[in-house]
Length: 195
Image (cartoon, rainbow, N blue to C red; front, side, top):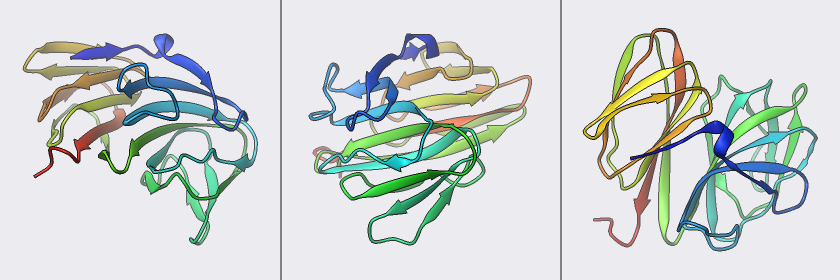
């Protein structure tokens, strides 16, 4: 298990130079934007404009804070994405333009190189306790709101807003909170070992 604190995330420029992103985790460790297998990050979007393109990559986007985005994705009807709508899975190697609905937003990005990995992002929102069973390979639990105690077979971990816990294969996550907590369970599936 590895706990990653919000204030320790690595800040990098967007691939298209239009902003900054906070890199939470990447595999292989130390990989660049051009050669990662998978990547988790957050970003503050403060202006309208195009998304960076990532050849051969699939991405899931979720809104963590702010009113949301209206996305125009090549080949699709425009989509409105807010903190109340499900996360959105789409190809990262097509043209995507974003229009802010009302001020800046913070988003969560999960990306996988489609010939090597796939991923799944599940939201959670609860007031007392919850149990999640990760069925893939390496997994992550990202806390969006509230303070969590996460119990695994390796021990107990405290997470605050913005913190992330990386776990092993087929991990069982037992979550507890004294108040309402929300976030995302992220699972990665290695296509070379699938099946």
